[in-house]
Amino acid sequence: MSENQREAALQYARKNKEKNLSALKEILTIPSVSTDPAHASDIRHAAEWMAAQLRALGMQKVQVFPTTRHPIVYGEWLGAGEAPTVLIYGHYDVQPADPLDLWNTAPFEPTVRGDSLFARGASDMKGQAVAAFKAVEALVKTGGLPVNVKWLLEGEEEIGSPNLEGFIADHKTLLACDFAFNPDSGMIGKEYPTITYALRGLAYFELRITGPEHDLHSGIYGGVVHNPAHALAELVAGMHDSKGRVALPGFYDKVRKLSKEEREELGRLPTGDEHYLEQTGVPALYGEAGFTANERAGVRPTLDVNGMISGFTGTGSKTIIPAWALAKISMRLVPDQDPKDVHQQFIRYLELHAPKDIRWEVNVMAGGPASISDRNNAGVRAMAQALESVWGTRPYFRREGGSIPVVAQMQRMLEVESVISGFGLPDDNVHAPNEKQSLATWYKGIEALIHFFLNLNP
Ligand code: BES
Ligand code: MN
Image (cartoon, rainbow, N blue to C red; front, side):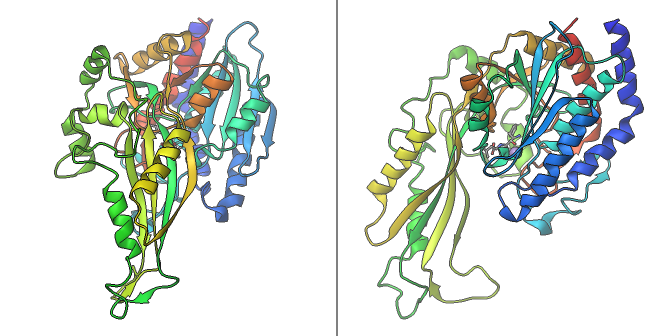
């Protein structure tokens, strides 16, 4: 029975490629940028779109739960009796699309060029969410789902999932499951199916330096006050030492030592230094001494300036000493670093190093701890087999440098593990102009997910 359904569901997905692509394009036209309050109604629209998809799939108890910011969408179908219950996670929000002038086609007008669909969110992660919808649809239409499913779709992932934690805590029974499936991650390469078993955490801050009460004439006052842009630059420069290590006091205290086995395993991934050079286009790589690029991006913590602003940045010239300077600074954390400790370390660094001739303040933005997931449960095995069925090769297991706060939240509050596997590629330009999703890979992904659900109830 299940083998017949496998063939029928795969055929269904193959026949409906165009329809599936249209559905993806539809959600990609909604600019659901979670960080920008101007897009609040788009976010609501996107949440309603997701809820409508769940209803169309025959899900029950479909509900859009408001939060203090962006809504959470829930739905379930529990008709598979004793079969496992999978909690499928997704986020329908996206990062801002700017700088807009660098997009070849408008970010919210999804456009196919070659094998790729270009749009903000195509890869991260509306594409992955719709792939899950379409795999479930193929099963629903060809005999029914082989497992019980619950859906948890949020609109705040790209701002650190601030309201998800409370929602999970308040709905533990509703969300009870055997494990979660999280497709918010990508593949190492087109021919390398990948299961992500660890994610870094995040601690994000805004550092504002203020000097004079207002901008000053740099001729009249140059040489008598500390320029806030200089002070900020000095502070930022001091955040790394000459070995590329983060110089916040105590930053490495809780960082686990990399085991020999893990080092060897990471060394076997097909992403050596050349991969990073090729993906980034920089003339040479940079980072903490004593670690490979793979290690630095996956198992070591880092600090980055995400943006800086100060003074006159318009066309032409203006001779001023700016009144203020601001940097957005985030740290990627590894197990067992605590974002709250890192906040204290950041403050301590500023107490120690900020000059007395300026004022500074720190605003806490997104944050969450890192996670390491179980690599050998029924869910992971079903996924590994599914990926192998479609790609003809066993998946790589890798540690991801990006962050997905819900994974640690579910471990802590629901005591469930996540199977993390999606179908984005390293050159998808996620969070950047011209984000795209490879369509060939996306269609394969839908087939892999059909296998995955069937493998869970053989
Ligand atoms: N899908 C990404 C996480 C990710 C990034 C997985 C790269 C695989 C490769 C997710 O949507 C994301 O970007 N998360 C944010 C979280 C942050 C705001 C807490 C991130 O990592 O910057
Ligand atoms: Mn993202």
